[in-house]
Length: 318
Length: 318
Image 1 (spheres, helix red, strand yellow):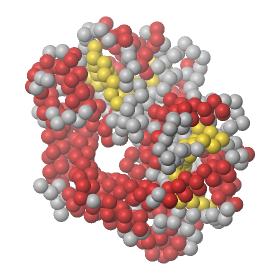
Image 2 (spheres, one colour):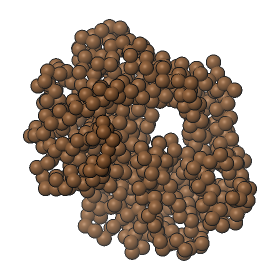
Image 3 (spheres, chains in turn orange, yellow):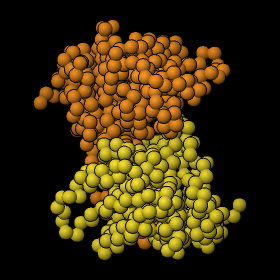
Image 4 (cartoon, chains in turn cyan, red):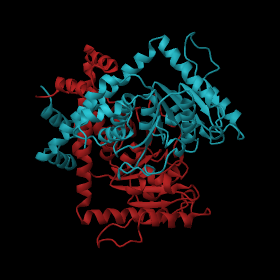
């Protein structure tokens, strides 16, 4: 196996196998993870990150594929990261092995990667940004992060993009579900896909209403556009790209892009730090301390907060 | 407002207002939380905790209500904790204010409480077990924890019960969804509700197949039963209670109940400890250290892992 500096150099040159290998190192939390990230840092910051989220059945993969085509026509290099929600217990991605977006599989200007959530909630949160960095360093102009589900961690991923696209489709009774999943609060651009179906106008109207787009806003506020598409036929996709570019320009004008990226980096650092601390806590299992505390809690001779104090005292400065 | 010892004593006597007040203190992470938990500890360990989970539309509330009736007929005191997945951004529970299970609202032997997820993933994990402890201390024989969604955190809650019930309904194309949500791995008892509808037998068969119930198992292994119900008419509900009792007896025979409760307590202590550590990390925001690190990451002069090391070094023993 090539060493990390060689892999990073090869990835920088856009060699697909090196890109794939680096993402695997990142995803698998390999011992070289830190070395990889340190080597990538100076090569990052160029890619524009677009998040796509929406309920199953709205046509996320088709839309992603259509966006890839649009960006390729504009001569951009594109990375696609498809985040699959997998069973929290088995750790396996049910859809991980499917052939995704076969149209672009042979295009050297496109990197496509599926990523499982690795079983635990924290996993997704730290692995996805690192994989985005790999694609960024490999020279992608745009990275599309497609989250397959609509759980909280998927929303979290999507909300960490430079621009978040929320997809809906007509006739899915999406309203309350979308609201519950929190996706009405993260969209910078809304897309009503399958707009050739009955109810597309009603869905757009309902969305317009739920987003309060009819209400007065401060001048200069971003007003999320609602774009109708038929992604399977490529209809409306250029308008989506245009909306994305507008949002990007709007953010750059105000310094909001840098601000958003800093907030994302801060969140990421916190997540990594907390994961590291969690591991230190986990290490205490080795000396049976946690087991002994749990026994006393079940017996009713200790409460969980006092028990937690003991664990925390074991790893922190006084 | 009454002080904590008074509230705990009143809750122990089963006074509903004291129970409600204590759960509010727990849910709101009030300054008295620790005092409350310490006072409750010796009063806990009597309630049997049953988790109920399943996709929207399978009839969870109706099933919960029917189970409450069944337990009440058997003279048991019952607590119901309905965990609502709320927007990760607004922190508000969309369904929190609805009138739940009106049939039992006036029964002094039943406590019903809705609980929001408090916006962030960690919140749910620590608040629900504490609320269960309040209901336990208040003399509930059974606590039913109904999770309204099927996200990972809901699965986590349900899997922390003494016995987990997974509900399905016919004709919902549930199979793959259930598998993705991980609920096929947490059920001790499976219920196919709305069994008077077409497709109930097919759903039960599919479930039987997916669970591998036809396969050989080690003697003594728990074989999750599949019970058909029409909860709205109370049909099959006694069979569910019977299945729950069987699972309890099976676990008690093997010491598995104590083991499961200890594992749950250990997990809970870890969660509280990690939350406390997360707060310490969060405190570092105050001195702008995190902001400065994030700035350097966006500039590409620092990677997130090295940045996290600095944060961790700030709070831990060397």
